[in-house]
Image 1 (cartoon, one colour):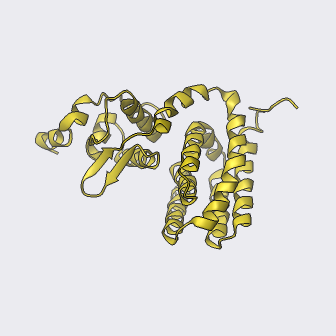
Image 2 (cartoon, one colour):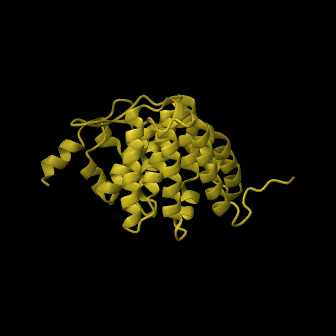
Image 3 (cartoon, helix red, strand yellow):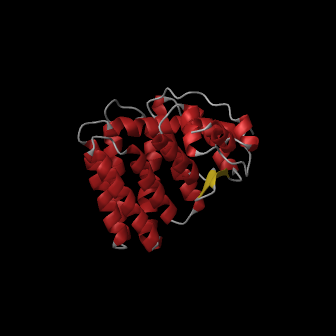
Length: 254
């Protein structure tokens, strides 16, 4: 890649002001998301600014283009950027809810809060799955299927399928067609990123999680709200038992 090409990708306000740290975290795409969210919240990236091309971001972060792609997808699902095919990735007008997420990350970083976050998941996600069974469009159901096919390939290759896990839950939240719910789920899943990764690193867990997802999707496809609700409740409870039950995190006095 020539020098002029690199300069072209970084032209404009966004290219000049991005101060990027090389990635050292094992959860690479999450760290990319964190840095870009920080740039937006601090005003170093503003609404309408264009991010450098994927390949340039990969060079700056010293990561693979696959990691950059996953990060951009996550940022788009959070409503922070818009990916325009053939044009690039642009910062969207940011909501207050999206900007306060870094503060929420700090508030809930303590391990004892994980139990409370799973409690929130148990209350929210089964109801969201039921709404998705009622409201999902054929296109949204097709997208859920595509995500699960990709997750199956990742698992078959010996990986956890964590990015696809997050994408599947985000797709269900979007199919509920309620922006408040979508924001809540994104926030909770973001906060539980590390514990979800630990869960999926348990031998055999990625495939069991994929099978759970299949049951949820089938209920949504059949427009069976009660079955979708129950399948999601079973799935969240299984993950909670693995993460919280293993060491008693987040248990409340009775």
